[in-house]
Length: 204
Image (cartoon, rainbow, N blue to C red; front, top):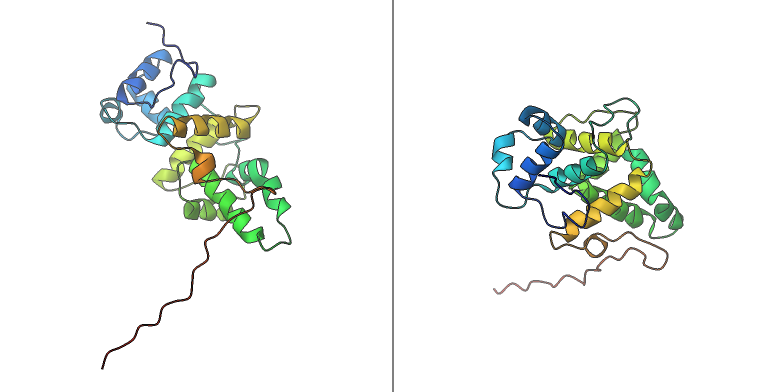
């Protein structure tokens, strides 16, 4: 069986059977497949009938476009380098304006979304990841490290991440340009303002 890996042919949200197809396509044993996708238990993941974790599907799509294990960890992208490549210009637009902080926060949230992580976790990573090939110690950091290792193989790593992340979320029913928009000069960051607090009247 030839498994077609073009985006049009796999335009559905991946489930467990797709993991097994992917493993056979890349001629990996279960241990190697689990390592490549950051899985704790390959058999459980491959039997899953519900959509698999976003990060696992993203990695599968990255491997489909660029087979082989990624760069680990020498000459690997860092979170900070990727952030500057993707959203540095967007942040610079708002320097010296009241939107400077919120623009950077929104861009951090967007990058977190691309990695399937919260903006608070991305903030911590961006403020700790200054050295090339920095290692993340927790479980979620390991999957992020694998994604970075794969992206390091692409000439346009930033564009590839945006494109595949947008596709993966869209197949799950989410448009990330709506849920986590990138601030631009035409669409600056928006924050809801809170109205005055209502005073509580105590009855004596």
